Image (cartoon, rainbow, N blue to C red; front, side, top):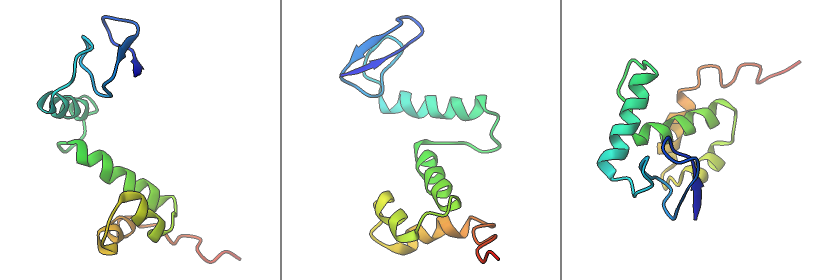
Length: 100
């Protein structure tokens, strides 16, 4: 049971993780629209969708210097090549790699 806040009710008890403002089960279409609206409100120069959140997590962890194999397991990738793309996106990944 999740205890979540909404605009209409200070605390909503629901067995669902994603709920509407009324406490009901959020639909897939509603969730997609919510994520898209968040991107628009943030004035992002591109459309976002739920997978964008997953992708940004992989990039953040790679930029923080996490081991590629550990990142592969965390992301659930069977093929390491799917994980390597996150490390390729970190331009300063090896900055200060060799410290004096």
